[in-house]
Picture 1 (cartoon, rainbow, N blue to C red):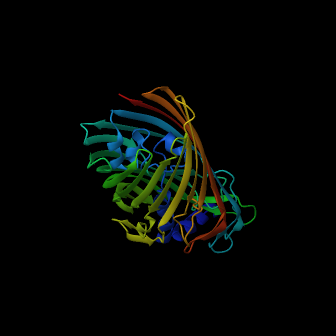
Picture 2: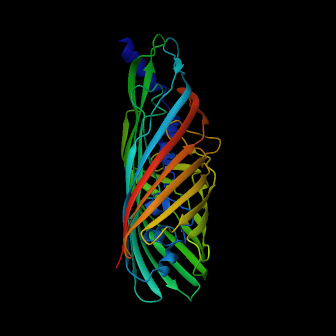
Picture 3: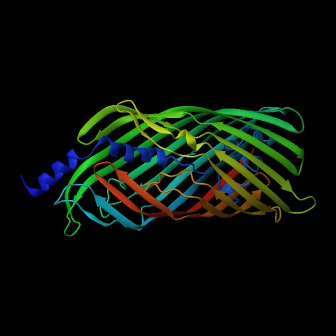
Length: 422
C-alpha cells in the first residue's frame, strides 16, 4: 500500500462522530440574523423600523403599523451584501500518529463573498379599520468559502445557508391611537455544506491524502407567527412593539459523512424568537425627527442540533442577544429625505466560537437618502459599514485535530428600493 493510501486510510479511521458535530453545527451557526428588509431601514440602521411606516416594508417589523396606511402601498428592492472574513495567527495541529502528524500555520485572507438579497412588501387597506399585507424577504442567512489553500479544511470549507420568509399579515385600528396586528410566516430554509479532511506532510505542509468528511444538501419548511401593537401619541410621536415567533426548522436531504450516505436525513434547527420596541419623534415645527429601536433575539434556542439519523449530535451553547439602534431623519424638502443611524449588535456566540462562520459584537454605521418622484412614488438608497470585533477561536475535533487563531468579519451593505402608493 502506498504512503498516500495509508495516510488516507488512517485518516478515515480517526474521523469520529465528533467531527460531524463540529461541522454540521455550522448550519446552525450560519443561520444568524440578517437585517435586510429594506433600503430605507438600512439607511438608518433600522432605528425606529417597527413604527416609522414610511413605506410598506414596515410590515416585516410590525404588522400593526399597516394600520397607518390609507392607500395601497408597494415596496420592492435589493440589498447587496459583501463580507470580508479573515483568520489571523492561526495554528492547525493534527492528532494523527507519527510520522504523519502535522502542525503549522492556518491563516486566511478572504473567506467572505457577495450575496444579493431581494425583498418585496405590499399593503392593502380594506377600509378605515382593516388592512392586509403580503411580503417576501429573509431573516437569516450567510455564506463563507475557504478554498483548498486553507490548512484545516475540516474547520473551513464551503457554507451556504439561506432562508426565505413568506409573510401574510392583517392589522386592525382600534381607535385614533391604538392599532394591533399579526401574521403568519412561512419559512423556507436551504443549506449546503462541504468539508474535507486532509492529511498534511510534516515536511512542507503539502496534502498527502484527502477524504470527504461531510457533504450536506438540505432544505425544509417551518411555520411561525408575529404579533404587534402601535400607539400614536399624536401625529409626531408614536411607539411600536412587536414579537415574532420562529419555529424549529426541520431541514431534510442527503447527508454524506465519512464514506457513508443517508439519503433522507432530517436536521432540526431552533430559530430564534425576536421582540422589538421602537419609537419615532418628529420635532414640532421642524424638519427633523429622531427614532430608535431595541431588539431582543432569542439565540439560546440553539442549545442542541438534532438529527433523525444520529440523535443529539452536539450541545451548542448560544446566548440571547440584543441590538440597540438610534437614528435621525432630515426632511430636506418635498423631493429629498436624508437619514442616518448607528446600531450596536451583540454576538450570539458565547464560549464556543467558530472559524467557518465567525461572529462577534458588531457596530453598524449607516446613511441613506430618499428621492421622491412624486407624492406617491420614491426611490431609496441606503448603505451600511458593519465593523466586527476580533474574536479568539479554539476548536477541536476529538481524535483528529485542533485549530486556534483569531477571526474578524466586516461587511458592506448597499441597498436600492422603489416604493409606490396607489
